[in-house]
Amino acid sequence: MNNKNPIWVVTDIDGTLMDHNYDLSPALETISFLKKKKIPLIPCTSKTAAEVRHLRNQISINDPFIVENGGAIYGDKTNIEEEWKIILGKSFNDLRLKLDVISKDIDYPLTALNDLNHKQIEELTGLKGDSILKAIAREWSVPFLTPPESCVEKINQIAKKYDVNVYQGNRMSHLLGNGSHKGNAVNELKAFLNQPNANVIALGDSPNDIPLLKVADIAVVVPGVSGPNPCFLEGIKKGDYLLAPYPHAEGWASIVNSLIK
Ligand SMILES: [Mg+2]
Image: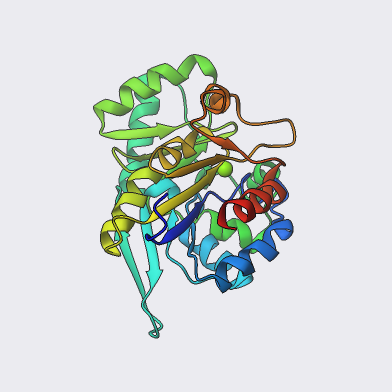
């Protein structure tokens, strides 16, 4: 890292800054420390803007935020209660139609998260009530239930035909416009803020974070309780990624502290 350039901490939220019960309390002290140091903490997540706005209020941060896996970036205008946004992907409605077309092509019914009832979403995500409404306020991506392994390769091939991309997760996958991903969003934000030389410390835990970690100056993998996601094992061995010493928020805080200090 070049010491003269500003530092950005760009972080995934679920599984990285938060554990699977949505707890980030072990990271709160470090978040305050970043604020004191005026180092931006930029969420970069598959969550929606509604979810991230709520989170920003809870932890009192006001830096820009990347939502829906890189589908859009939002931020506040200084001293004005007005939000700006940069749209990088296709709209929800457009993508939702494409999901149906892909279902037909592969002859397997792909189920969008937004088509489940609240009870099913609660069982799947652990979210309740108002949090469910925020999670389904999708504008730039369509999350859907990850289909059986046998369908995955077919979907990826067909997605290309429709100019879309699939980011596969454990239980949930995401359909996005082609070329919109977390790494692209970070580069767009650098250009928008006119900070092309920002030193990016990026943290993630899952395959959808790979594009984010690729554009980082320092790329950190945050493990779960049973270790890092297998997709990172080789990269960790080769030294492409640092591995946080503990799971979730605790590991996040520990490694951010040591990198900043
Ligand atoms: Mg994650």
